[in-house]
Image (cartoon, rainbow, N blue to C red):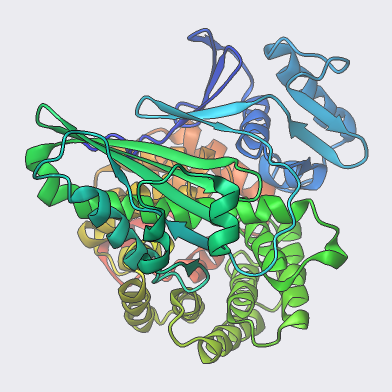
Length: 525
């Protein structure tokens, strides 16, 4: 059985004009034929296309593609020029890659991504003025077929979604009694927004024909009537009982990611001085997931800006904890122990502000990784997931913790679930890296190499992910490729060694850890 609309772990392909950009294969195709490009040019293109909703600064480009080492403007310009030539573009027309002088570059052509045959346009959003936390109304779905035994689905799915979304502490969900008043009426975005006071609404249709059930959903921003996200699920009627909850979980997880991303895009249009605490928070989340030093520092500033407006804003305290965790985990700070202590204190503060926020439990659990207390972190992650069962990042984080305890089977189940729930997650590269280490622990070095390289080529991957790719390729017998990944990791941090890697990945004593330690020595780390 396959649910169309639940993307596979193979991921997605970006599509624009006559081109396809495949992150999994690390390949650009024109009209279906591969275009030969140097790896650095492809990496530049992936970073720009993957962040087409925003400008990519030169600093971020250097951090992500060249590992932060000194690169001349001429070298950057040469890679941009080559990328443009491959697309039939040039510095004058700038149909695909636009230069913003003194700031960076932006991919300006309309982009869609393909997941199991479905595509959704990813375009720029009009200027909006968001105020307060995001809010949503889930309208009763429409049953488009003749009345019958499956008619109940139209209300049941909407009802279950209201219950699931109500677990998200940052999202205000309109109660069923109010949103269901729109049953059977023509939908008018502005009317719904004004009547219910919401920024978003979710509508859907259910069709049942010849033993098949089709469920389509659409998330709309009431402020400008823009479709933020849409999806279609198709299953057999005999499978409905088994997979209905999986569909509801998939929709809820997508809404969590899409609304947050949309709020960040809307906030970018506002002058910094006009940001309310929620706008500053969403911009901070967007920055912190880019996993480079400068954006992490900017995220911390945005969370502090939110806290200046509301000192009891638990979500901003959690975000600030996440940035301190990143400072310690990636050794951005010369005092990682102090950052680890601050990460824990901030997460505890977030819990005091909101004892039911799964994000607060997630950050407290992550802070314990820095002291090697993985068992205690697993208890906290269990609690985070119990509060929000479809919280993909908590599910992934538990899979990461299970990985460090040499439990590859349990870990793989978790990370596969996280990938299903959030296939475009900003931590996707880390999810793939967990799969690589789990394969290594099982002695499956070919898959360890495959997952490791896919992880390291995914936008956002940091130096430790390059080390995981090196471990897998070395154990698979591809020594030259392993040396390339070691060089890539050292470009990002010349001091990187076994001690610093294992301080971030506190693997329990096991045969798998011994293999990692031995291989790191063979790699010269």
